[in-house]
Structures are given as structure tokens and as C-alpha cells.
Amino acid sequence: MERHVPRLHVFFLPFLAHGHLIPTVDMAKLFVDRGTKATIVTTTPANSSSFSNTIMRSKESGIDIDVKILKFSVVELELPEGCESLDMFSHSKEGNKWGLVNKFLHAVQWLQEPFEQLL
Image 1: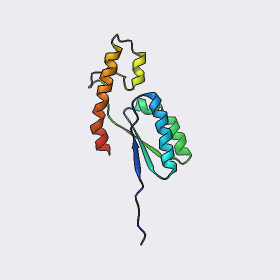
Image 2 (image 1 turned 90 degrees about the horizontal axis):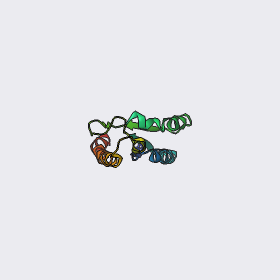
Image 3 (image 1 turned 135 degrees about the horizontal axis):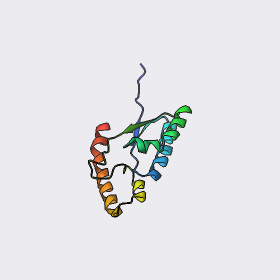
Image 4 (image 1 turned 90 degrees about the vertical axis):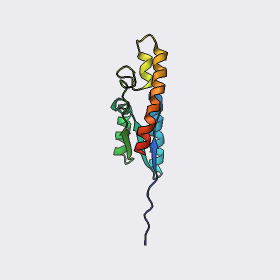
């Protein structure tokens, strides 16, 4: 009797900054190439759009990487609308940019619970 061994499923949760997303996709590709299932977890469609073309091309070439989006409501976390990535603060016109960065870093901690629920 043949036994079915489930595939290892690896979840990647890159830090919410553009420079972390593309290397994460590259790592996910390496895992998939070795027979592992890979899912990249991000927070908003805006963040996923920065690597969606890469994911699409990978799927077309047979590398299937899933993407899951967690809720990250910046307004509820007292951040300005659209501040969904650390990179967005470099364009901020608000006077207290470092205060916003600190709020953002604190807000990222709120992703722990939805990420654990996803797992």
C-alpha cells in the first residue's frame, strides 16, 4: 500500500518594505523548485502589486507560488491612508516622519494574530 506524504508548505512573511518583497519571491521560487509548496503573505493589494508580475511569470513557467493577503487597516492603527509599506514614509509630507515610522513599526506587530490564524 502506497503512503501519501503531504508536501511541506512554507509561508513567507516579508517585512513591509519594497526591498524585502522581491528577494522573498526569489526564495519562494527556490523552495518550489525543490518540491515544496510556497505561499507569500502580504498585507494589501498595493503591496502585492509590487511583485504580482513576477508571480504571474513564475506561474506561467510552472512555478506555483500562492499569495495570501492579511488585513492591515492603517486607519484603525492611526496611520495616514495609504501608508502600507515602510517605503511610503520616504515620500511623506508630514512633519513628524519618524513618529509615523515608529507608529508603523508598532502597527506591524498587529499582524501576528492574523498570521497565526492563517497558519
